[in-house]
Image 1 (spheres, one colour):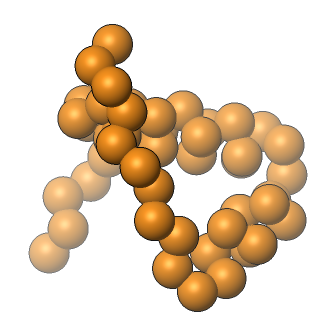
Image 2 (tube, one colour):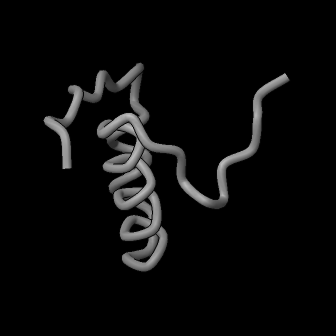
Length: 48
């Protein structure tokens, strides 16, 4: 896997993420890792 790009958290987004249930944090963490590596998560939707 290529080197991971840094994640820059906006406002209280990291605090809010940490309050999620463990299964949700696992899913989000995996998706973030893919994006950091320049890949697209399978469940990603294009923004309008």
